[in-house]
Image (cartoon, rainbow, N blue to C red; front, side, top):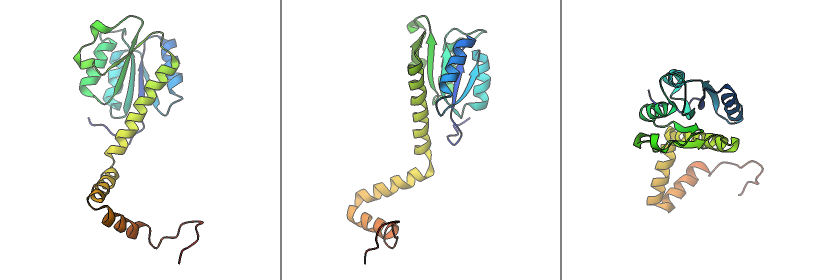
Length: 177
């Protein structure tokens, strides 16, 4: 499944502690990310199988109920959906559990600070917006025009002026004769 950058971006919160999950959800609802929550890694994978193209941010506890841990979830996400920015959280140190597959996964110790979580979510949203802009077909047109203008700045600027400015009247500006 590829990434559909046209859809709204999603933050997926995976935490078995209801109060912490509710706090994270409440905080992230203040961002421009749509928030989805799960209480286990298995539940999160079900969400990801359906929403992965929209997910920009995954915030998961390391210690989760059922068979998969947050580390297992992060490893799976990194391999299947590498564009998803992932942050793991735990009240115990994690260094020995991380491996090369998780070198891009951030770790936030508990108790985490609300501002730190908001900043991570905003970085994810910003990266997702940037990717959406860069993958838009019009970005290539602008880039092509820029590349052509670098070959002959005078000719290109004259062509651009003739094409886009000459003959157009600016609102509120006096017309030159």
